[in-house]
Length: 354
Ligand SMILES: [Ca+2]
Ligand SMILES: [Ca+2]
Picture 1 (tube, protein in one colour):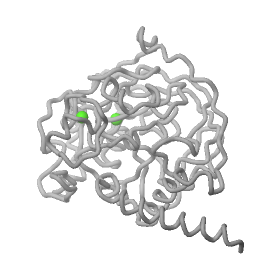
Picture 2: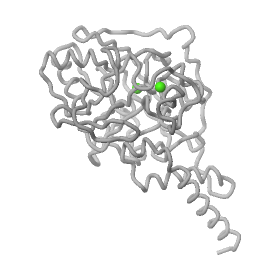
Picture 3: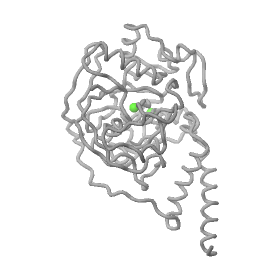
Picture 4: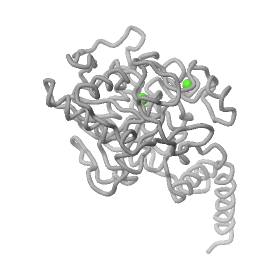
């Protein structure tokens, strides 16, 4: 092997090691969501690849079309359907195709966001807001449903670290919430139970979105890292995220450089919507998707209505939460919880309707 090539490889390994160590400190989403050591290594490698881009082989860079106009300034024009029992609003998401995932140049990107690929979806309805505590209460009162957190007597709560703690559930979230806040401490099982009940009681078939439906709905025609553009600094007009407000309480957090006014959950719809008139697609609470989490799932995605149904127990969650630093608050960012029964203080959901 040529001597100069050996030196470059050695330099890359040292740089990857340093970046890996530097990246350790506020690893909040890793810590809470059980991302493996191997994925952390790959993430550090991706960072090193960017830093040493001149020397390492480059990934394919997908062509990006021009960003369409979102129409947010005048308020998007959409069809809304109100579900009669819970009062949930559903907006019509038109059939269409989009580029799913992110390209290698996107700041904060993880390798599981690639390769970017074309996906086409049938039209569907999506709940305009995250399911609220009040709407979930209606479901529970009419059915007697008991959530996984209540049945097993504990949930995951943040008090400087993520811990499994007894006594927490949607009824006792661990911070102040009224019925307009998104329900939290709900598992995928709980979300699917509410969808099944609505399918029996109300016109239409209800479900949690597939990961492809979620990203298509979140992007609303945009190709930028976030539906408002590229910049995390602009987050606080559009999303409740880890921000300067939260940093007063948790000084070690890596935050967005702006103030959204909320440490924990905000009432749904407190911020500006995306181009499909959907609120809080990014931030506030993480949202369950129907797909099994597979870091390489995009390689085998069907072009039409893809969904990953096999391959393990972990399930996809999307969009980030009040706890999330900028890299998790992106349209293409993917995260996971290890089981459909997992729940936490920043985990909620929204439904779709067909
Ligand atoms: Ca916040
Ligand atoms: Ca959300």
